[in-house]
Image 1 (cartoon, rainbow, N blue to C red):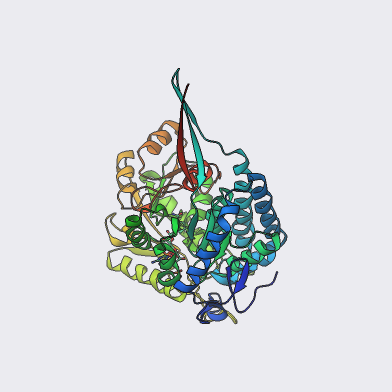
Image 2: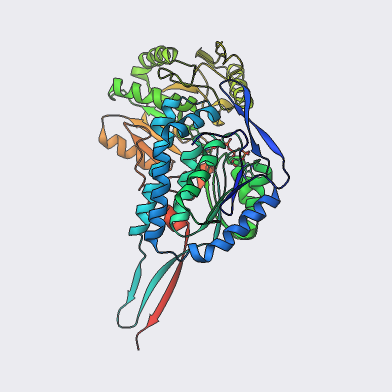
Length: 484
Ligand code: NDP
């Protein structure tokens, strides 16, 4: 399965260009050059995709779960058989190391299909018995045509995290990957054709968010939207979809605290903290970008973090020794650099990193930045309040549990939090009081797909994962039968 130069939409089971015939450039961020082109889709393409999904829905929504199970497993098998090609494509689109795509992104994409393929075999609903009078039972039925819109940071991983449960529950999907990272979604459309997924069950429309994405959100036929992306985009989507009474799942931005107590296992914490700070160049919504450290170990921590950060290898994404590849785009690199300038204006000291990396050919024009550690900023400054989504962490000391909590909870976001301590009582107290959808204790990014996934405050609305997402993609109908 080799990537093509001109990508196509996947509509009604076929690969087709945009109706307008227009294309957008797709840039490889490691070399800073256009390497392929994607359909610049608009409302017309979205209309066709919706019509195909509507046509497929009556049959797909009534297929037996074991039929859907088999098809989704087949798609997972094809992804697995083409793991290397998918990983290389993900790397070329996003700048991340191939090794990361091989160990995280692509394995997880196929797990998403396998997990929800098997989940649907075990999905049940409740009954409520009114003694001597009646029985109520709940029917859980698919919604219809649903929209799945995903971002560029974990492209196939997050796209399939939505598509797989939507299809498993019997919905037909119109999906849009990020225009910055479309290649693996295109390869997924080929995998669906090879697997024999019926025409129109899944449709993938490529293009710009404000054009193709907005058309999906606005379409009255699309009854639910599952979106992952930035908080401001989520706000816009909610404003469009809510008055139409669409079901909404919004997984949005984060500014996650990493709270380190002096009694933690220092070495384990350092390994975990380096990962939570800079994995995927800090371009994971769950990265811990604000690090709060109990004062007795603050100096030791700061020196060790700076040393280990400087040791990270930034470079050629295809090399197996590379830790960090390129940032996703020129615009994003400029955004991250502008936050580093702001951090200095706000009184922070950049202890290491923050400068572009001079790369040899063919990477001279690539978007490579050294990971940065910043110290000396107040909690309420913009650098500590706004999502940077890059290889930048801020560090600060704290003295008490209450102070750590106040700092951790002191932003508009509430996606995830990490706590490092050997005191289990303290871990439980913190977990209870942290305002976030996910709390990790003595670990980071340990993921069980059965657990609820999502954020509080401005980090989102609704939950993905396990039963939560199966419920999101189905409508409950109560049937009440009175005894004769
Ligand atoms: P964006 O919000 O810019 O885009 C996300 C997706 O929405 C893209 O496919 C985009 O298309 C599309 N889009 C943009 N505007 C609209 C619109 N008006 N209507 C419909 N669709 C639209 O996010 P990024 O791609 O920049 O991703 C980074 C963000 O995602 C960060 O804030 C990060 O925290 C968040 N995120 C959250 C996660 C979570 O689980 N909570 C997980 C991963 C990331 P296009 O790319 O073409 O503009």
